[in-house]
Length: 292
Image (cartoon, rainbow, N blue to C red; front, side, top):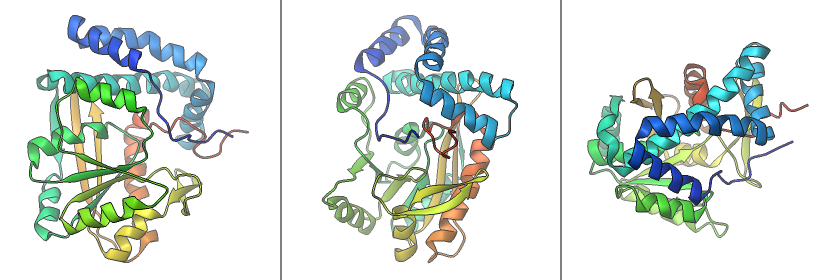
């Protein structure tokens, strides 16, 4: 069985080529090149192709033939979202439009002065969050809690061609130093952002039903919120047609002291997003242990 290895795909050369194409020929030409890149990954990324096929075939109940076509569309959509990220960071933000659905919940959290937890997932384009917060909530301090899974050289290159952001990162460390940083951030009325749909090796997990089959999820974000009664929002940034992005923010309104209830509410919200935007779900490994 394949599992998530904690690392993203891509090379610096690939990003440099796309930045060159976008700046020289425009975004549409970059999308055209992507048509061939997506086909390449279907053939040469077998494990990812299988996992995406099983998403549509077994979890979303598409037909076998349709599921094969959806794999290609999923790869293309993933690539297009990465190109959008590069284009917006390189100064083409005016080409895109944004719908802020539930953005007032962010301000409500700030007014409580308790900090807050934003739960998202590996879906859509949450990498654009920095532009949302820079524009709509410039006074909000936001910390992305993550492993250092992106190749550092790729991250540095993207930062060199993108606008500066006030978003900060808290990297999960073996020495648990990240716990002190998270507590300090909450004391300062800052937000912690977790992509809570993946767990890491040796971490404590919960088992819960998601899209018809039991999956493991990390306990950490849910326990942190419930034990300290920290307000929680479910947040996603999804791509729609014609260069349009939809920002969603939904408050958790269930029992504040129950980690399992928070997890169930989070998964209920996430299921709706996966069903509505199935090609923007980016867990390219054997997520449900479907491989037989």
